[in-house]
Image (cartoon, rainbow, N blue to C red):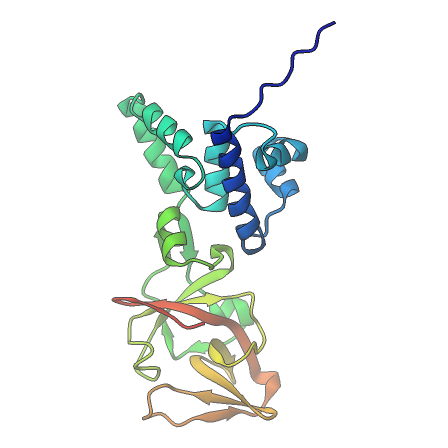
Length: 248
């Protein structure tokens, strides 16, 4: 019985796999990915994923699209050849199919919900926050370009009320809060409930004491004195107004 020899990849195909692996290695920690999780997501074996990343198997339009979506990049970033192929395929899609695709894009949108502080803590009267919107939706490519490094699964939004944090925040700004941070994690701006009231303020460690600071100098700083009445909902990572401002 003769065994057909596997067709060797071209230099272009090998380079595509190398570029994809570079992107995967650079982003896997941030996106919490492994070859096993990619395999489960794609419905293929882990060995097959490894073969695509190491250049044993060549990439095709279907698998390239799946990798691009999972890594929040465009196919063109690792394969111009396949990007052109996909673009040519798109020109052959009829109007009905394009409408279905448009609906799919909406369904795949990155959605950030409002932070419900009462659910998080079980108590609290919002004083520095107000509910103007319930959800913000982004095109995935737009979100990951603007908010590089943020995991949308960990984020909630709050609407800022008042001027106590001006000029860092203005009334009506949106703040993106990382809800995985529920304890003091270094100086920064937090959403927290204390003694039945919810605030968005800057917290700063001073010895064993937490100082609560308003960026507006007209408001005096104060201290957290009863830890049993103190609950952190999350740490502000970025806020959106007329321009983007990263908090850290």
